Length: 70
Image 1 (cartoon, rainbow, N blue to C red):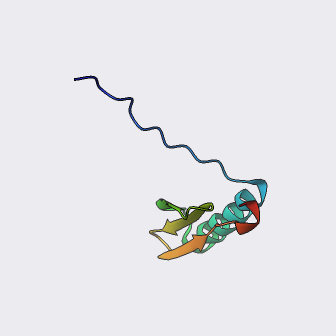
Image 2 (cartoon, rainbow, N blue to C red; image 1 turned 120 degrees about the horizontal axis):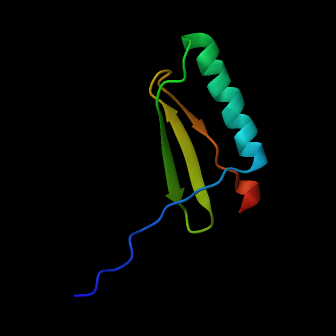
């Protein structure tokens, strides 16, 4: 039985998304003194990808979905 190639998952933020993420994580560090852990969720919609990041420290989610990029 031939082994298939392992799945490779890669995602790059746009400049706009990166700026939003940097501001958000900077606010988390200012409040809590550290970044904590982040959980990224990529949700294919058929048109584009939804993108959210969850902060375990702040217990909040930042929606980085950029529908203008679809």
